[in-house]
Structures are given as C-alpha cells and as structure tokens.
Image 1 (cartoon, rainbow, N blue to C red):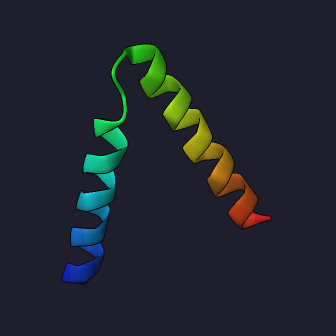
Image 2: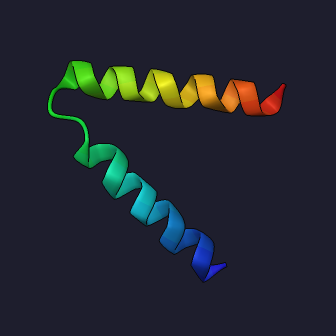
Image 3: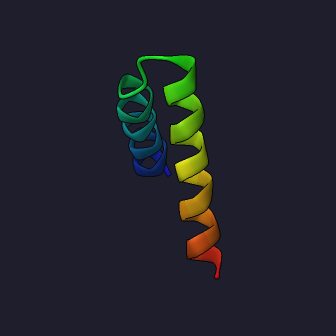
Length: 41
C-alpha cells in the first residue's frame, strides 16, 4: 500500500512540475483523462 502512495506522489510531482500555466495544466488533465478512457476500453 505504501508503494502505491509513493508512486502516486511521484507521479503527481512530475505531472504538476510539467505545467507552467493554467492552460498547460488543463491540457495535461485532459490527456490524463483520455489515457484513463483508453485504458478502460
């Protein structure tokens, strides 16, 4: 369980570190949502 929490934390840091603007954040969230939708199908 701790490994999952650590992995999520690292992912969040990398994800948020790549966003320089609010617009960039929106695009990253959209890409994340698309990836989740593809994984579910």
